[in-house]
Length: 77
Image (cartoon, rainbow, N blue to C red; front, side, top):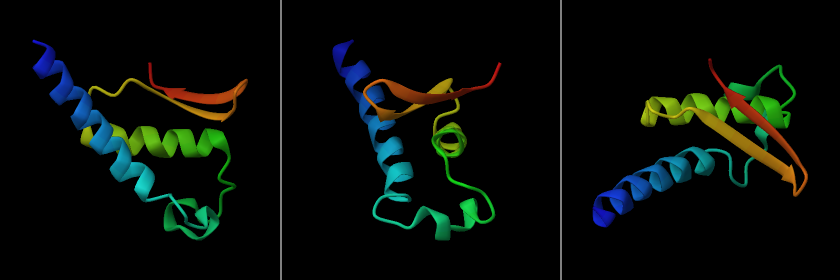
């Protein structure tokens, strides 16, 4: 059973890496997905949620931390 959980967690980790690699070391303002919008934490959170939902339909919530005490969350009801 533990191996099964590890495989699932590895799948989530790999999917998240794919999504964050699209943003890493990039000028986010220049990416097509963010043209004409200010890429705030809230906008980034929804972007990551949408991309993760494509890869892992069970995605239910994404949280983006700006600082140890400040974050943005996105989820759909």
